[in-house]
Length: 72
Image (cartoon, rainbow, N blue to C red):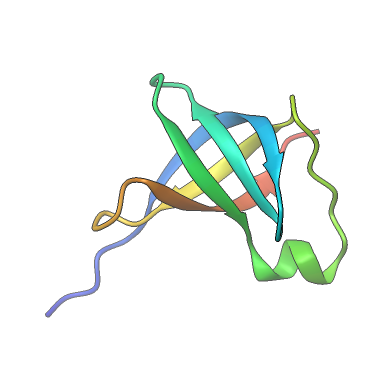
């Protein structure tokens, strides 16, 4: 079975939840649960409500995503 590439979308963080999880409102209007990527945890990159982020979403589960970049 071929591995499918993740879907990359931009969004805005609306809520900060426990365990480095965030509620992210995507540009298309959907709201997903965003988890902080490992490298962002390792380098202590802080995410606050209102930040613009890039999210990778699996094509199999569209309700969760990985936050991979915080726009400046």
